[in-house]
Image 1 (cartoon, rainbow, N blue to C red):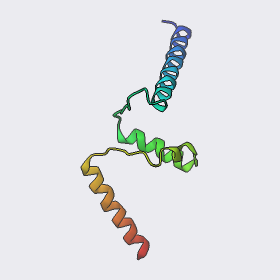
Image 2: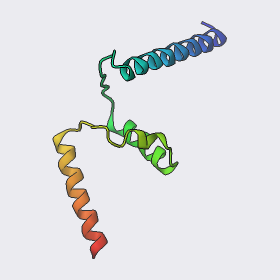
Image 3: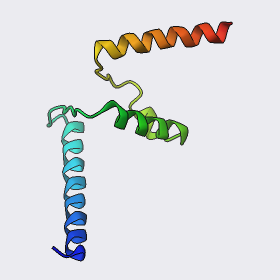
Image 4: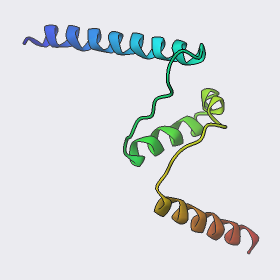
Amino acid sequence: MTSLTARHQSNTDSTDLKQARREMELDRMAGLGTSKTVSLPLSQVARLLIDAAQSNRTWLMDFADDVVRIDSDLYEVLLAYQELRSDLRTA
């Protein structure tokens, strides 16, 4: 496959994926679709969320009340870190 053909295929795949996402979101908003979940590494999510927060992306607030599932081990670490940070602020 030539690089031009590969690029065209990549653009087509990207367009198809965007269209599928758009249709799923419209179905979800209309109450016709089922809620979907996706599993991905925390490093990928964290990197994107940090960038969005630092860039003051307004779309981030659209998801502020969404529930996120995390491992209980990570939850315990986050609670301990939160406690440590609050102790450092009051010291």
